[in-house]
Amino acid sequence: MDLLIKGAAVCIGASVLALVLKKSNPEMSMLIGLLAAVMALAEALLLFTSVRDFLTGIEAASGISSVFYAPVLKALGLSLAAEFAANVCRDAGQGAAASAVEFLGVISALYVSLPLISSVMDMLGRLI
Amino acid sequence: MDIDLIFKIAAVGIIVAVLNLLLTRSGRDEQALMTTIAGLVVVLVIVVREISDLFQLIKSLFGF
Image 1 (cartoon, chains in turn orange, green):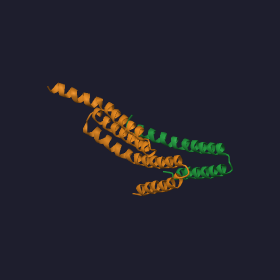
Image 2 (cartoon, each protein chain N blue to C red):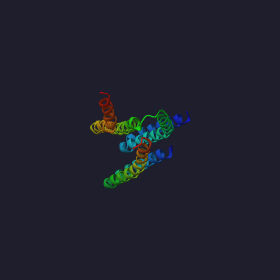
Image 3 (cartoon, each protein chain N blue to C red):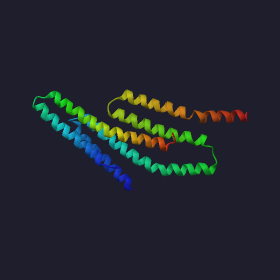
Image 4 (tube, one colour):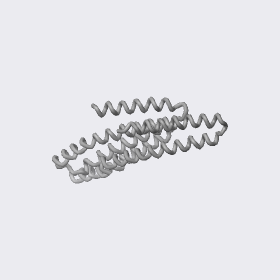
């Protein structure tokens, strides 16, 4: 809860400062917003570390091969990074770059999950 | 989370805006442009370092 309140305060303060600077130099105001987003995201990811350790423990206990688990985690990271970058681009008014980086995120997630798909195909082939 | 960094960038922005105004009023437009660009580069260095830290964190966290 403390962390959330701190993050909310940082983001609101940064938004106000960005509004103040928007008229005189808009590029600086965009960078302030970007920095606030980076800070909040970094805090969230530091919290996520313990969640990931927990999930890894469950995976080790259940005996599922990491072929099934790793792509899910990787796709989560990819989507996070792609959406962050796309939103930053959209804030700066570059819609084309934003949708391109979103598409890049989709294709990267597909690429990362290729081993998963091929292992499902293998399993089906052995069943038939 | 250090809000000092955000305050630092806001301070740089305000200083650049004031300098820009002063230099424009005294008729030195090209120096005003140079001031704006220098402030932007300073802020960009700070922000790029933070973004690089964030992406390193994502890479280590999600098993790349």
